[in-house]
Image 1 (cartoon, helix red, strand yellow):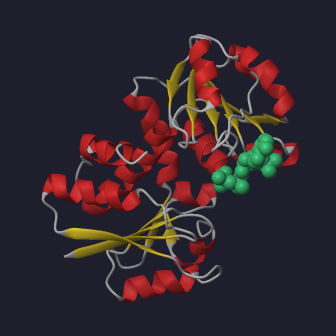
Image 2: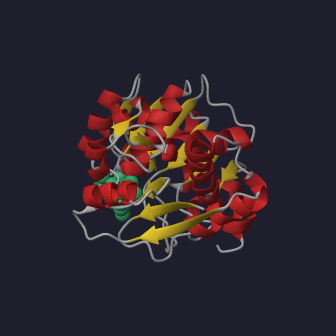
Image 3: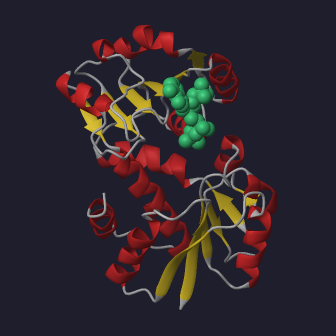
Length: 266
Ligand code: ATR
């Protein structure tokens, strides 16, 4: 039996175990997926311990995604983003991937939304914002990053090909002509707040919200009212998991089974 796991602190309410175990069940794979909560600062030791114990693969979540960069070989996208959320132990050295970025592009693809050549606005310049900005730029979008702390957006845009940046005030100028909008801030999580003024939303826009609790955030509700297409945060969560599963197993992920396991718990 193979063991996979997640390290984070806290990891108590993670939806990754049921999502991955649904995949094992759907495909008849003899494996388990468990969570570990190492102390803050001890993620590198936890990765080494997992490798020693024969764990086949690890997901990595807050606050360890940067810490583990030192103990894995990051693939180029993870290195550029500066964060690893998936580690594969089956090679000679642990390989680090960033499937949060893959989750962004696959969420759009799954909904038939093309990214190449489109104008995208990413709100947020933290971990989720970095993943979204690199993913969309690599897929051919021209990306504008808007963040409450403008300097963080400017620093990120300097690393993302062709990107521009500004404070949240630039949303009123950028969103009306954009095709794609991603909320990569935590605004709207367990609250009825939105980082984007409703008046700038329009019916040529597809809006992806990284927040998944609640599934229908105020941003998505107002986007829907404006006639925009909406993609909720559970899709991003799903496809980062599907991509991790595929890296580890080498097989196509059973998207429907994983989606059902996830959504039945949200
Ligand atoms: P994550 O890894 O989830 O992206 P993070 O690195 O803490 O978490 O980043 C959180 C993001 O949400 C940042 O872009 C943050 O903006 P700042 O860089 O200005 O801190 C944004 N954010 C959090 N609370 C916000 C709020 N009330 N209004 C606007 N942006 C907010």
